[in-house]
Image 1 (tube, one colour):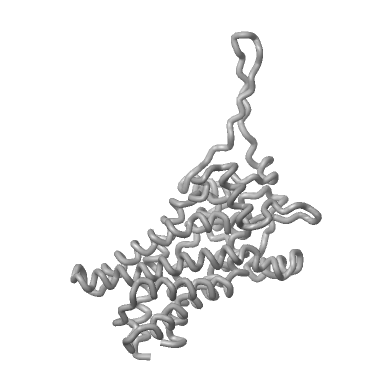
Image 2 (cartoon, rainbow, N blue to C red; image 1 turned 90 degrees about the vertical axis):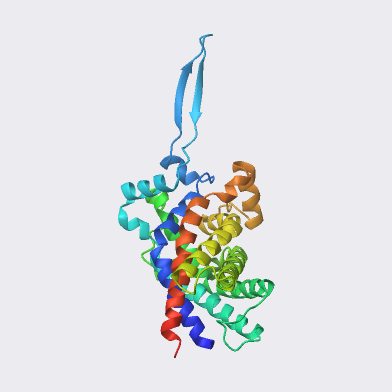
Length: 320
């Protein structure tokens, strides 16, 4: 397997990431909804209604900004920012998939191969716990490698929601990484890295292990042959499990990576735990599942494209 596993996983991941990028962007925007952000006060003014009461006094009713969903946010982006805005940060997505997913997919296959009694990884039947451990290790290494691109991607995707004068306006992922390094220091490229690593461990373990396990079960029980139908079914199962497991940490990761530090100012969050506590305290526990619909709407297609493409690439590279 060796290097070939990294190349196969990288090709499949880049195709899957680029094709589902708009859904990922909408997910990020939804995860930032409700966040206390002074910059947004001017952009989204609450509705104030004056009501006359029977005793002659006037009361004011302040309506909070409306919470909008997947389609509403997509439509809003198209109207206010244009169709190209749906691909804001796509260069960062491609770099992230090149660094993060190539590493995790290749390393997962190597670990599977090493821990299997079979010489052919396609026929290896590892216990589910070994698959999960392989996913945890592969995800953590991949996330550490890809964190700078992840930070850049989140910022580029979130930029359009800020008032024009406060946008970062990164030209590309290279420009984003360069500006962050100069203005905030090299360490800023690994902001939220603990969250990225934790999320990647959860996603990789749940996604790859679930795919392998469901695919094996389908083939063993003879429900379907080893073809597109099996790959799509196993992919959907893997995408759903990964979405449920990773969404809370993904919300916190997005908010920590996106926070803007003013010179001499106080950071909105001191860390991941502080962000989680403030989010739950001000918005409720279910705030940790903000963006779940676009998460699963993106994770489902992403996982299907990822594994279906991976299986086809493996066939092409089988004799190499």
